[in-house]
Length: 353
Image (cartoon, rainbow, N blue to C red; front, side, top):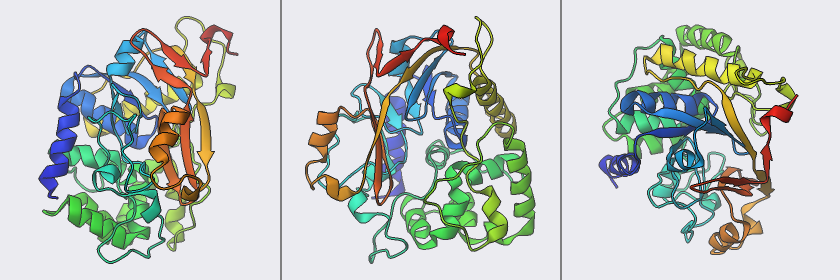
């Protein structure tokens, strides 16, 4: 396959969408994606989804949510178009029948599976591990967006998205192989992240400054499975990605008073919009909150090869991501219809304290 093949697939996903609304992942990568897409197509953010909670904004309808482009997500419901980069295939024979065929995911496009991922650097000859970059890097390439200047907040936001700077440092060979496959003509940002980013003191100071600014909105936590880097002065920059939604952070709402989470999310959206010059209007109020049921599958061997599609249908999986060699996290009891959202629990906003 050539670069034009996957780029054409991304553009086909975008062209299949009505350009009106997006659902965002409430983290750096997701908000960068939403900012770029909303700026390019004059779209609006109608909701946020974090794998557990679906939060709808500003009175938008279930049909608006269903017809939205779900960014930095991998959704398994016919009629919902998503662009994401999580590992989603169990084995080579998977067809993922609940997933809309108009969606795009690089791991699925290149048939990267759970069975041949998480090899800890022991890549087979000519083989790959899971896709190592962010969703924003797909969109920037597909939409032919220029790379910003180094040492700007915009540049370091792109480096920081989904921890791409760290992944390129720790999994160099896999990053090089994906770069060669997806960006054969070169990609100055990805090239630099692989070869030189953590070697220059100026980048450390710029990244430190970015993290300090982001700390007003994002959670510092990192995945429990992440090991310390061999460049300890950069370790503090791991994580620092998501605006965590937690009902215990909620304060009593009236008709126009957003929660602490909403303030943080909108603050991050405004910050990213300002630093990238990608104009997007932050949402104003939360109108609905839905809770899905999140479960885990411990290891690919718990589902036989060729049986994952049946498992998806039986469990009615709405979204899933294979997050490590020993864990697939999936969400069920969530369905977006034209006239309603069916969920494990519809949380009444006026009951929250």
